[in-house]
Image (tube, rainbow over all chains, first blue to last red; front, side, top):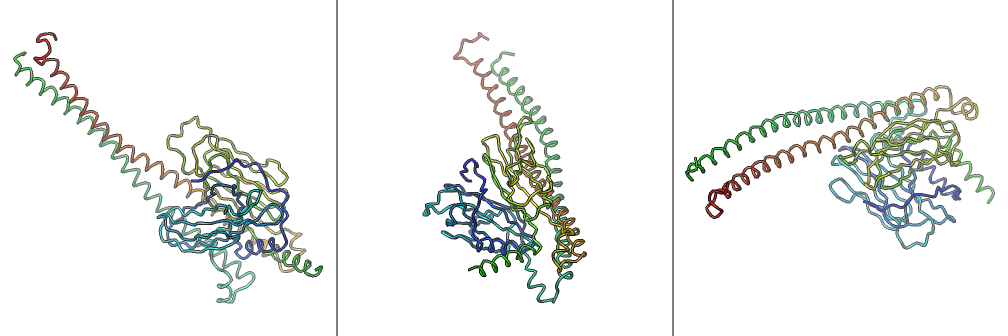
Length: 223
Length: 212
């Protein structure tokens, strides 16, 4: 899937310009519960992150390229694919972007980044990905505006949303467990049947052998 | 220029004081070393999470060393280290703010897919309450509730990843059962047919008649 270099550098002394930092903080704070991890892109090869998501879930992600040397941001290319191979988002030569989609099929959604080799950046490129699914991708600003909530009420509404998401997740896990249990029981029954059948086949085949050889020797008048 | 910088810093401080808590839940493929970085904004935050090796080769024998998980602080110290495991939970309190590095090391060459979940939880303390007049004690209680709900969500993500792993194992078992059984039958029938042909050949006229 990707060619990866051995990681040896920690981006310790990062000189990020204030405007970029503000943009980052904005990306982090507009959706309070979100995913903001930083990834090191090697000079060649792609780096992919994936998540197994079931159908009908909203996915929202922001990505920003943060460069480690001299404030220059190198452009990257990004591609997001669905489990069936469809291209959901494909951009080349960008330094920031955002994509959003609602999952139609359940499976592994893959987001891959690689560096567009046009730049002469010497260091490794660092990409900040803010990946939110489900309840975390919900737009609380519009809910707050529509229902005129603010402050503590809004926080409590967010908590209520989180509890509902937990309940849904639990039901989903329960259905998965039911599927897996039926699969295990089928496999168990199959193992038992196939072992008995194999014993039966063994007996039948050896019986046929003995009968055929007896007929053969009788024909040859040896017995 | 000075005023613009002041405005920029004010905007940054405003954004910082917004409640920001990070939740990460993704999978990466680890060939040799894979590192994920997360920024911890406040010192004293609790960093918790879990990871599960989802896609490992089904023939992972019992003496496979497993995957190593190492957390490095911004100062370069190793805070947390788990060796040779196929999945675990972790939790520690961040002593300082900064960029934390979460690394997965794979000792073998076969790539493994690791599904991880990292959560950085912040509960406003009394000092934060004193500094910002928009926060009142109920915000502390709400933050504690939120952290408790996040821990339930984290546990669910862990269970989901383990469920995926068990499903892979089950499907591989199912395929193996069918494949090996059909192969066994074919081999059995082929072996007995070959036996019969061999015995016939032993008694055939072209070979010396009573040699056997």
